Amino acid sequence: MVLSDGRIAYAGPAESAITYFADMGFPAPEHSNPADFFLNLVNREFTDPNSVDKLLDMWVSAESKYGSESNLKALDDSDDAVAADNDNSSLYRTGLFSQIGTLLRRQSLLIGRDPTLYVGRMVMFLFSCAFFAVIYIQARKRVQEQALYRLFLLMWFIGVPSSLGVIAVFAMNLEFNAIKREVKDGMVRPVAYFISNAILQLPLCFVMGIFAMSVPGYGIAGFNGEAYLAFLCVYSLTLWSFECMAQFFSIQFDNPLLGMLMYMNMWFSAFLFAGVMVPEEDVIWPFRAFCYSLPLRWSLTGMAKVEFSGTTFRGAVPYHAGDENSTDASLRFPYGEEDPWTTAEISKGFKCDPNVPMLACNGYTGDQVLDSIGQNYKSIGSENNVFRDTMFIVIIGIVFKLQFLVFMVMKLKSAKPPVPENALKAA
Image (cartoon, rainbow, N blue to C red; front, side):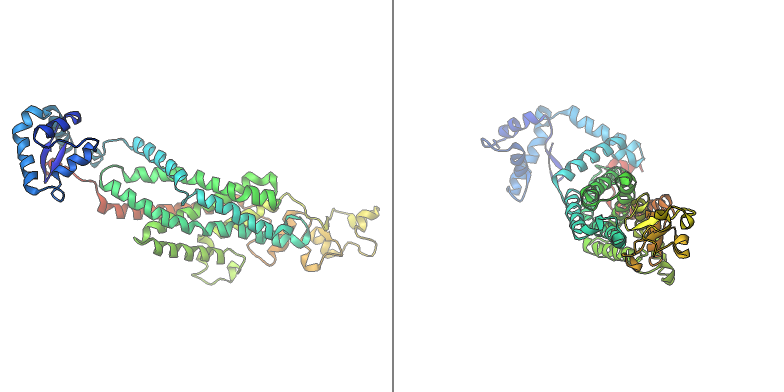
């Protein structure tokens, strides 16, 4: 069908259109695009308006010969069907699951073609984390002096990649504007976009976590390989939580630059209130709420527990009940007769090599090291709260995801799909 000013210039089989316009005195040039030719014929900006009116009048008399009454009747019937159904869902010609499948396929294709949102960040995660792993190369040694630096390396590993979510704010803003136009055109349901996006988002965050930690963390920094899956879970869910935060800020403002500024402000707050820079009990209310409502506080505690637990650090020996009175000199005096077990060492459960500085004496087991570090960094400790920490990370992500949903619904109210005239009359 070819329309101009709401009037029909041609309606019928596509293969007959060239013949019709030629019979009317408008033959198509050889080797030209028929679609462009037809549009130029009825476009008053490229064709004389009188010629366009003449062409429209020709169809009135030629309709019986060239028109397809069955096609026109089908269009009328479809309009009547829409008018008979006041449910707005009838405006979408495909089902919800079909739309979700289409959006999933399209988004998967775009991820490969446009590296801005995910592929680019995967590469950046790999190289940025590898950079910090090389800078902290001595921390790969599980010795007393490097225990604290190992914790600092964890902070860089999660802090820098999570900050790069600012890129996602801009990309998601562009994506939402495209979806907004499609919703207005009646092509997709908002819920289809929300579901398809959520389905892809979490697995992609795990892939980004693999890029960030596999080589830098476990290949270069020598992390505990036995805890790889548990660490990856906490790490990737933290990335997902920040991804939900980025998605919310991407539509909070029409200008994506404002959303990017808000994201960086929130990321900085998360880094500041992670429990390492300042103890949470020293933070006054209402600012202390940031310690509990942002993901880095929980992710750092969980990752430290997973990474340190079950490992041992050289430069110390463990205490076993009765070692101080043992007949075995190697147990009673592990570092020589001039250095017996003290009451403080028995209480702590370990004894450090005399060559290790007192302030660097952290413990033999990973849990002992965590407790020693926790004397200065209160959020760190040997308590096994990994499940609790992970749940807080997930809850924070869900809260931002729900806020995104609310803002999406509010913004898409102004982008309702077109309603046929018959449907409006029926209503």
